[in-house]
Amino acid sequence: EVQLVESGGNLVQPGGSLRLSCTASGFIFSNYAMHWVRQAPGKGLQFVSAINTNGDNKYYGSSVKGRFTISRDNSMNTLYLQMDSLRSEDTAIYYCARALHLAAPSLWGQGTLVTVSS
Amino acid sequence: QSALTQPASVSGSPGQSITISCTGTSRDIGGHNYVSWYQQYPGKAPKLIIYDVSQSPSGVSHRFSGSKSGNTASLTISDLQTEDEADYYCSSYTSSVSLLFGGGTKLTVL
Image (cartoon, rainbow over all chains, first blue to last red; front, side, top):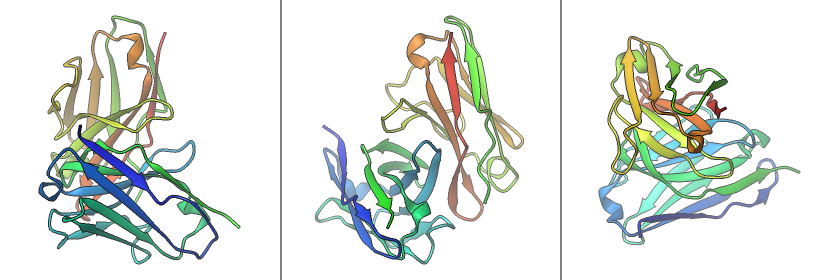
C-alpha cells in the first residue's frame, strides 16, 4: 500500500525548534519530488516547502524562508522539515505529499499537528 | 504573496452541475499551465482531483473537470452527488518558483 506517515508534531514555545519526519512506503521514494503543505486550524492550505528527487533543489514559501529547512534521506525513504525560530502563526497541521511534479502534490499523508504557544 | 481568489461557498442540487472559479494573476495562473484542484473532507487530508489545468489522476471520477481562461481557472462538477459535499482548493505554480493555493470553497449539496 502506498503510504506517507508524518511524525514529530508537538507543542513548542515561540522561538523553539522542531523536526518533522515523513516516512514513505509502497513506492520508490527516490523517484518523486516531495512537498510540505500546512493548514492552520479552520484555515486554507499553504505551501511550505518542496524538494526535488535527489535533494539538490529546494523551494520555500515566503513565510518560512530562512527559518525552515527541507531535506530527504532516500536510503531511509524519509522526508524531513527542520523548523527553527517558530512563531505562533506556524501553528498548523503539516502534511507531506508526494508530487506528480513540483507543481502538483498528489498523494498526501494524514498530517501532524504543530502547536506554537507559551 | 496573496492567495488565489475562490468563492467562499457554492451550492447545488443532486444531478446539477456547478463551477468553482479560481482567480490569480499573470504570475501564476495566467503564466503557467500548472493549476491543480483538491477535495478535502473535514478532518481528512486533501485529495488531488485535477492537475495541469485539466488532467485527471487515475481513479478520480470523470464528473470532475478543469479548465483555464486567462488568469482564471475553473473546476466543474457534473451530475452533483451528496458525497461531493466538501471543501475544494485550487493551486497554481508561480513565477517565483513556488506554489500558491486558493482560500478554499465550501460546496454544499442541497
